[in-house]
Image (tube, rainbow, N blue to C red; front, side, top):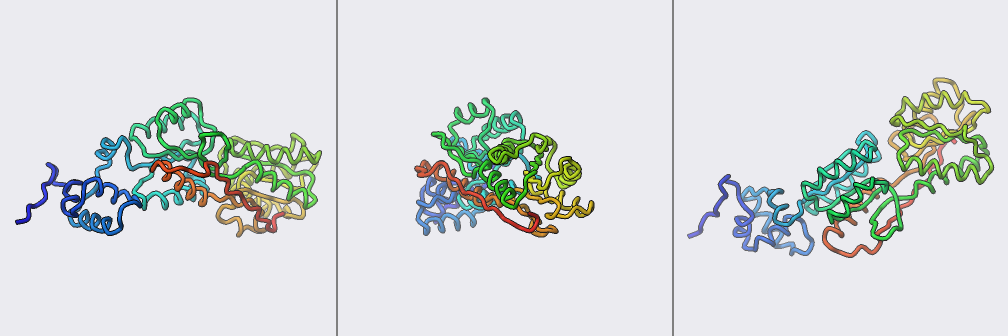
Amino acid sequence: MTTAPRRRATGRATLTDVAQAAGVSPITVSRALRGERAVDPELVSRVQAAAQRLGYVPDPAARALASQRSSHVAVLIPALSNALFVDLLEAVQRELRPAGYQTLIGVTHYDRQEEEQLLREHLLHRPAGLIVTGLDQAEGTRALMARSGVPCVHVMETSAEPGVFCVGFSQFDAAAAMTRHLLARGRRRVAFAAAQLDPRTLQRLAGWRQVMQAAGLHDATLEWLNPAPSSLALGGQMFEQIVGQRPAVDAVFFCNDDLAQGALLAAARLKVAVPRRVAVAGFNDLTGSDQMLPPLTTVRTPRSAIGSAAARMLLARMRGAAVAQPNVDLGFELLVRDST
């Protein structure tokens, strides 16, 4: 006579119930439901069938207490309003979910103190891993990360510093490449227009500045820096101010595509010929840039590829596997369209 599996007081099936029904050990059930590749596929099928039949739902809190780690990965990004980070998040989730991990998203609003507080809160949930944006964390944040022992991967930037795991590209090199392109087109008064002024934007500023200085063309009046959030509206406002500058500029390199898109809309409204009167370039190749009139010259950044590679690197670290290449530079692509 078959004994019915015993349920906990809540009436919910337990891990032990699933193990008994599948004829395996509880640890095998745990590993199979986490998606660990070392588990035999036939056992995984048996465990999944038993779990479905019993209506078993894993208890994240119990798992965290038992393993000192949860099945969650904390992902800290600066903004959800920027499509760049939405693309990155979707790629991270595509890699982590099949492996049995969920993402806990924290939005820092480009604020280092807010980032530190978010990290403190996430560490209370014993995350299995961390993905953080950039390498400019506050001293307190770096100390928290080091003391926690939680595997971490940085995204959107690269570093050769020992012990740092990161996936990104050189913001400096990408901006320098765009500036050289504008100079090669015969432009000499190339303005750099930026908003938000986060560390990656300032790296782009440095890339533009170095190329302009090397060409003997740098002029501080060509730097248009606004700490306000990046937007179409701000791009239009900045463009209107810049084209009124004397001596006249003949190109504007915007630090982000939404600013550049706003500039192209303003140029149409003001009847400023692009690129004959002034060339316009952007950064990130956001949605719609190829549909502008004229289509926007920009830098395509590999944010989806960065998210996928970072998640895979983190999975290896969480499993205790060696990471052959801790600093992954995925590069960038200069997309030359009709606006330059």
